[in-house]
Length: 138
Image 1 (cartoon, rainbow, N blue to C red):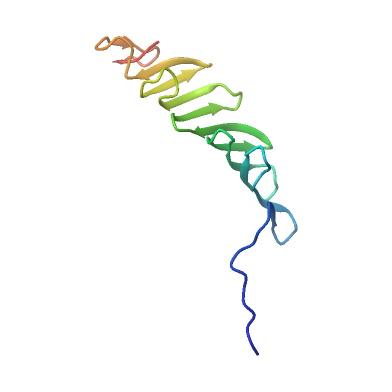
Image 2 (tube, one colour):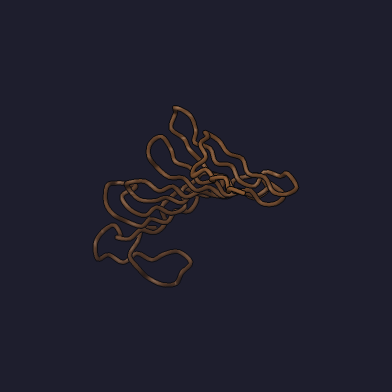
């Protein structure tokens, strides 16, 4: 009996993969003309997921969801990367995200609390609660 040739590629704009019980576990979506494309991986109960997407701007976006609500996301761009909290506030930036200078900035409640390189070269600034001194901003 002759073997049938297997196709080398599958072509579609959206593919949904289900587990043996019929639950959606993976969605691959090439998007439309607006330029979005994404891969969603779902937990067995469907409440938690990881989403990887490309944005029309060219940025890559990785988001995490627990109990359907977003818990944070990571954005990678030509300028660097940023990590955002569930409420959308920036938590950390790395690269030339703000001001055009390579830096690492840590935020609390949307405001910068620590930066490398620090502002005011050579100046030591006390960081609240740490008991240590180091370069950075308050």
